[in-house]
Length: 169
Image (cartoon, rainbow, N blue to C red; front, side, top):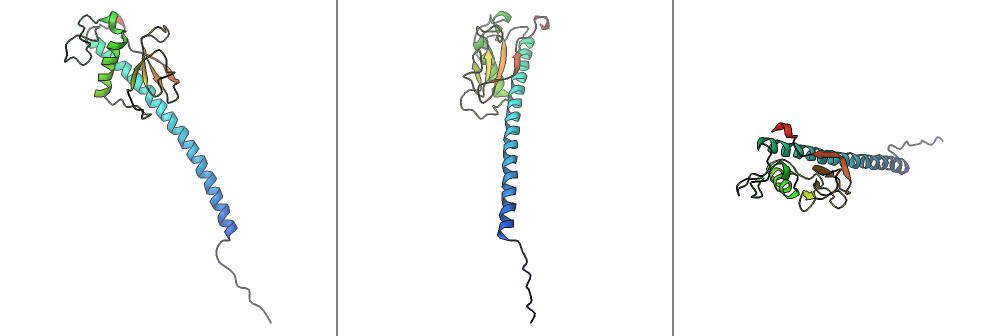
């Protein structure tokens, strides 16, 4: 006479697939957002490293009354040139030697996990991806500055002056 209808518990396959598709779309959006956040954090760290290194070079120069390299093999910022004073401070090799020592002593680490040196002598970031560039060459707009370079070889932020003002020593 009367047929009893049995009620089934649970979700249908279509309902489960729809939920899984929605979760997949949300996860993909989250990964994209996270990657953008990560890239911005790396760029910010690189710019801060360049600014901190520039300040450390200025402090070293002021502490030495205008000289960066005072000579002697045990001098961490030495190129064994006792006459290396303010006029020679802009010399790229002198700055590179001292900056490399400051980098190895401090907490300066490339956020881009590059292989090879973290510092480079150049006039731009174009071929120095993920490095901090010591600009001491012919380009007058960046001479005497540190340039923070991102993973794509583009400059991050403004150049950081590494020369201390002459009135500080």
